[in-house]
Length: 115
Length: 114
Image (tube, rainbow over all chains, first blue to last red):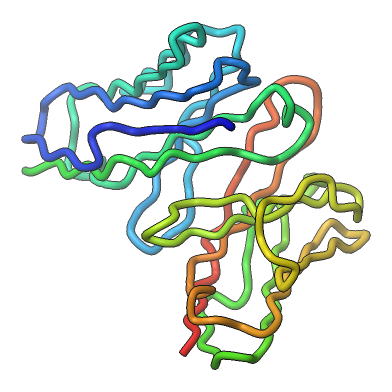
């Protein structure tokens, strides 16, 4: 059974710092991995999606990497800003669910960027 | 292009009642998935509908059900509500084509059961 873990559960950094959020999964047979952002009481905003054949994806100040063999993904945020404060979730789609909408989520990392 | 919309946004119900939540996907998206989010369990997959058929189901009791209409709009129903059903219910839609299958989430419906 696939399990997704995110460490740390919470992180507080000063503005301008570069930071890395971690995501690990127990079964390397994944189809893709998606990173989301969630603001308090709101829905999820998709940040980056990495296919299993890809090593990384970039969007602006965000860079996500995937090492399928070791069951790890990282989300790198450059030059953090207070507006980046949110909960960041990673989710995997298993090979067996490749043609379905089923995602398995980690518990998230709550990031606070202090001005 | 309009995003995923969910109605109502907030709902308060009493134990034993039933509730129906609605989700309208992004235009052209035929897959709709539902998730439950609670502080203790996090985000958990409920079920997915594609072309009016349930394609996948999570590990939830039969009190949780759903359907999809020909215009891809989806509803989920929870019968005989329990206190533990209090949660944020999120739906997500996907454009099913070869490749990414990226999911786009709505703002959620906050259900409180008293």
